[in-house]
Length: 307
Image 1 (tube, rainbow, N blue to C red):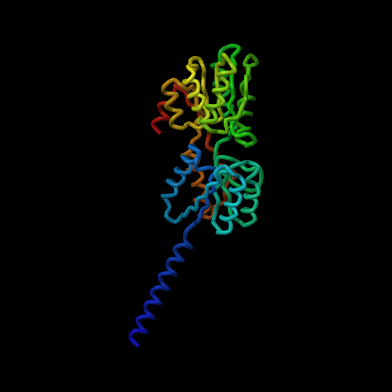
Image 2 (cartoon, helix red, strand yellow; image 1 turned 180 degrees about the horizontal axis):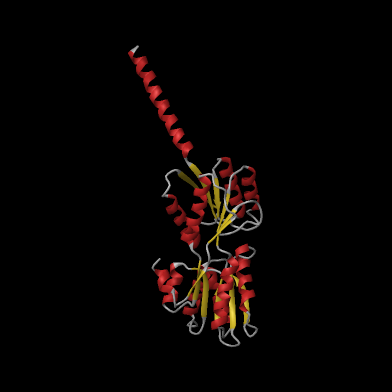
């Protein structure tokens, strides 16, 4: 009888522990974070900043996925997050158009969506980030002011077809406003440093003289810098990028790059987490929460290097 009593007590204690564990899990606000690509330097900086922000609330649990720049894979990952009945989804879309079915499925399931850094062409969501057209505009304003008369320039596009690539190019083209400036070539480097370097190497062979390379992100700009340095062609060529990554800041400090447009990874992550916290409290989600781009040049680079 004593053995039976002990077994019964052990079962009761075990059941109570499981119930307590389930209750604790139920108390968690679960967020699915569907990342575009863990290989992207800026995207990973923003993800790390989001993780750090989330550490302030032990009642928030985050489930991460990595689409590795595959839009179809990202949709499958969102389906899985919906099946797990997460409380909210933060998505860094691979593609503006391609993410729409995922956003709409989350809407149907009653799961709020935060599009971080890149918007969605459809569905209901909160956009947290910076307007990509503004990055291109700021690059154009800098070049408009500093390019010599009758300048020749080259433009390194982001991945073709992606909304943010199109928006950055559009912002640049619309704001340049210099009829004397000739664009010699406009090619994609797929947001990749090695590809940016390869395209620039080809340009160096094709064009005996040019005054600037404008890149849609810092990785391509840094690749262009490497190519110009290797060919001893950097002198007299301005280079502009987007994101404000440490390597670009160091290049500006060294006088090797002229400009980068700071996209505030920590600021965007913090803003996204503030939306998550609001959702957890039952507050209505805003339509958007903007974090402005900022132009960095030799005149103000020191203050960004301290961040």
